[in-house]
Length: 178
Image (cartoon, helix red, strand yellow):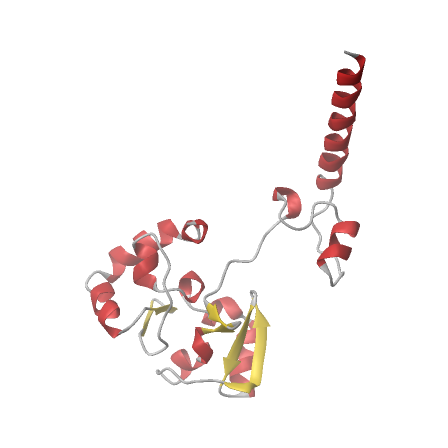
């Protein structure tokens, strides 16, 4: 019985120390590697006390929106493929732009230009799942960019834009766990 009590006490102590250190500030550390981050902040990584986490972004080979410039949808009214010369890292993906000006506009306020639902297909998210997108299947609604799997799916999504956005908003970001 004494071993069981000591073991229970040791486990409780370790848990209490972990909780106390998680109760501290959620200020981000300036440590580069995950291993060093864990050493500095025992609550970092996949721990619920680590603070906000990034939302997943649809990216192929790390490139968001298949390389399309998200700012161009707003400024040029069309899908424009960006260049590796003008890139910006944000939310776990590399975003490409047609110009340094577009890159800088995005960098100053990514949420203003980034597609909704992490760039996943808006129709798929409204249906409770995710799907890739084609850059030329898009629409701006109330100042927000929505992308779809292809033109056919976009036509289906456009039959009830308001309803599909409401459904997708309810499902996002929970669909990422599916």
